Image (cartoon, rainbow, N blue to C red; front, side):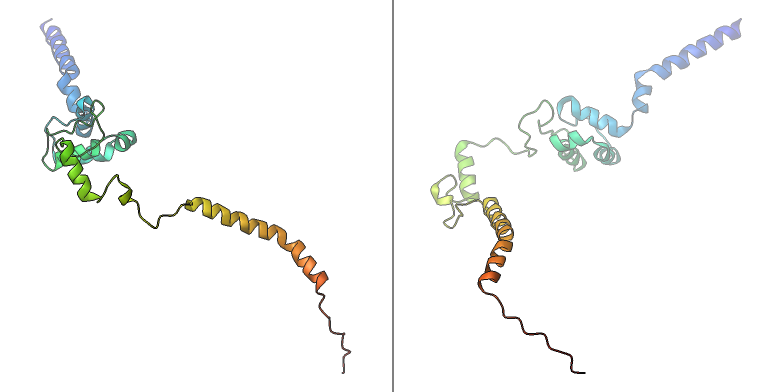
Length: 175
């Protein structure tokens, strides 16, 4: 009877250990924990090994890769910037993955002026800009070529009738 009770107790302990969150957590791949951590608040808050972070980059779903800053945030964590998330995740803001401080309007204007002189004024427009868009010019050239190709057989026929070529008389064989 004691053996049966001991076996039942052992079975209950093993079942509880197997169903515990730490056992389930250990069964989850580390790359999945990185992605789950990021999707909670758009930041990587935990400490992960470089191997886990590289695996997370490899296993990142395509939509997160294309439409979020997860790859930038994982790379920042690889470089040692863990915990300095960019607020660009699903609950974040702008989609800009840089960690630049907010600039005053005057400072932003000065930086824009240095990047593109006379930005936002008529002086920033080049003098030799085309007025007709290039795709429209290409379409016109293709249409002209098609019209010439369609009109050429009647024109050639008309030219042949108007200017007949004199054909040489057939020569007899002199053998």
